[in-house]
Length: 95
Image (spheres, rainbow, N blue to C red):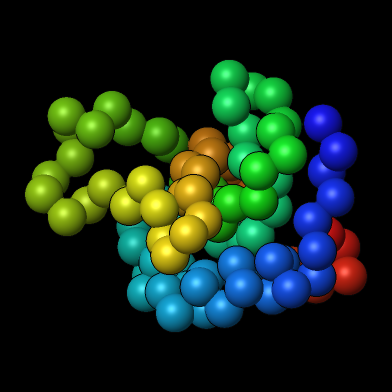
């Protein structure tokens, strides 16, 4: 896993997130949104993703129509992560 992403790729992911940031942060249970590496089976991958942090992840079959986050936003995967952290922002320099 190289974990090296170009600044232009990070900027593109942030631009996609900025399109929905305020809307997603208003959703019940959402504790934060950011751009970072995707997790799969609790292991960080080298795939850049738009991450949504929620207090509690629910099975898709328990969600009402339109409540689930999309699998992708533009060309980036959307990774929903269970997290109790509060709302946060991430600086570009930290990626």
